Length: 324
Ligand code: B12
Ligand code: SF4
Image 1 (cartoon, protein in one colour):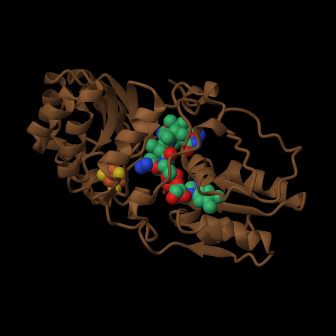
Image 2 (cartoon, rainbow, N blue to C red):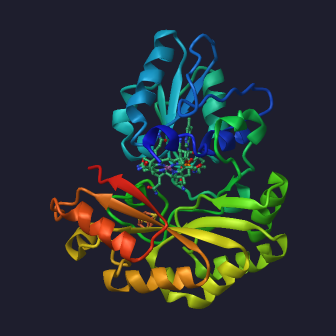
């Protein structure tokens, strides 16, 4: 699957969550440059853009076009949160971190023309308070799937290259209450769910309670987990029994020097093959996430990685370019 198609796999729920946090006196329209052209002929009172590192250049162009028309722009999401000074060059204001506690304030300041340059949420959001995304605002037919659910925020680890190692991220790994996630799944009216958590096993106790709670729903589901899943065979049993059919795992590299250079200590290369075998034995597929471009990589890295993937019968791989 190439990059052209990949960007239409699913939407991000960031703006759908923001829409839910928006007080009812405001009207909200959502456009996604991943799924179609932005219509610059509108005249909103405020534009908010959700920005990742790979979409930042395009986001800054969009921001500049609106600002030239006199429309103020707020940038948020993980890239402006990581590098707010860069983002501020292209925006009227930047939201650093989670929006739950800030968005209503940003809107009210904008309406009263007393906007600040930066809004910074220093407190981890209480996951019982994250609202349900407003799916009805999105043209869902533009994506391959929209049955996505987020059950946690942050990660128990802090690998150097990941946004979870940025200063602004609240390192406290937090899960939503089990009942809230179950209710959201029911509201989607689907039996096929993709969990978009960075690490679905950040708190294995929560994961165990959760998979028990969803077992009666008869779902088929997929999630991303860290490589230490191999240490939890009973959890793997329960995940499989509750309908898990594939796991996305950040193996990243087969080179120990590369792994330690990014402080990804939980990745023990000598356990990779066994972990994959354990997952396959339970009827689940593996999507191996591999990163290329470490200082310790040499030109043979591609062939070596491909041979390892084939040897272990890994069903899918996702390639990432390590981006400084
Ligand atoms: C769904 C998803 C996708 C979807 C949609 C992509 C998109 N447009 O964002 C698809 C499948 C297309 C995708 C593809 C890719 N993805 Co992706 N994806 C995700 C995923 C799993 C969930 C995103 C989400 O909905 N999060 C939930 C929301 C609620 O969290 P949030 O965005 O942080 O939003 C909160 C705050 O940041 C803030 N906020 C966010 N936006 C805004 C905006 C404003 C105005 C304000 C005020 C606040 C605000 O408020 C929100 C609520 O608190 C994330 C991981 C993750 N858990 O976030 C990776 C992630 C975003 N993806 C990532 C990557 C690397 C990619 C790819 C480059 C992979 C590849 N090699 O091809 C491609 C890029 C394709 C593209 N052009 O977009 C990285 C980005 C790293 C970075 N530093 O930017 C992430 C973080 C995964 C990771 N852990 O590394 N991805
Ligand atoms: S385990 Fe994955 S999500 Fe967690 S910090 Fe490392 S790369 Fe990021």
